[in-house]
Image (cartoon, rainbow, N blue to C red; front, side):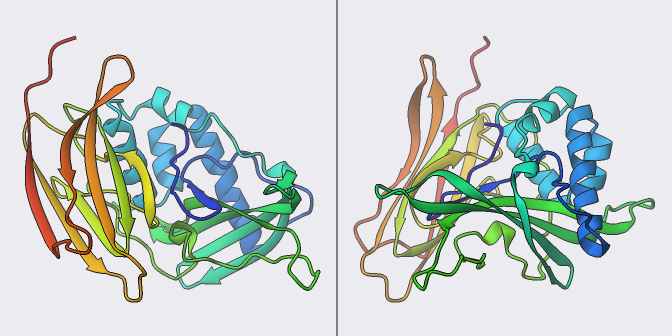
Length: 298
């Protein structure tokens, strides 16, 4: 996939290229600086230059992109980078709304009308585009402290509030990836190329869940059900699974199911792990081992 999607109510997170910067007015100050970062990032995607991309992305985002690529058994090279950035958002279709700043995080918010309206009644809708930036060093002797692109998110909303006024962007807990919260996330370690790619399927109600495979934290944004790429994949031999759960206070019901699957020929999937505790009986910590044979030569 060219865009990593996070499941959330009326929202999803786009981790990759934002496309060209909106030029409907003349930005100044911090906004101009941040839009310059977006333009610089787009150029890095087009060139496929890993050095240029590393210079403009946050350390967290660069490592996450690397890990998502190798998890698909793809080398993190120029061709992969160009593919990841080949689907621009097109900021020329948006109108600038506001600049947000909190410590070493900042955000640009844009809006456009949603074609066709929202829901069965086709109510007028809008799409907010939120670009999150962090201020950090690039590391090493030559790594300067500067603003770097961290995450990009879209939020769908009704165009008008109940009182008839035009809706404003309001940050939501369902989009933690673009929270302008002053937190600069630590970069995960770079994953080696796995032997198997895979996906995680989960159904989670009434629990906060943390899942790690071989020490690599998996993306489980939002509650409810869904599936996503298995970050780091699986290797031949033993793969250690750790699931940590904490009950959500006041939840009306509790249900937890976690599955890990690997692909088979013909667009089919094989389940290699399942955790399905009795309703309301999930352990605080559940650990297991997935044993995988050496992959067959193609």
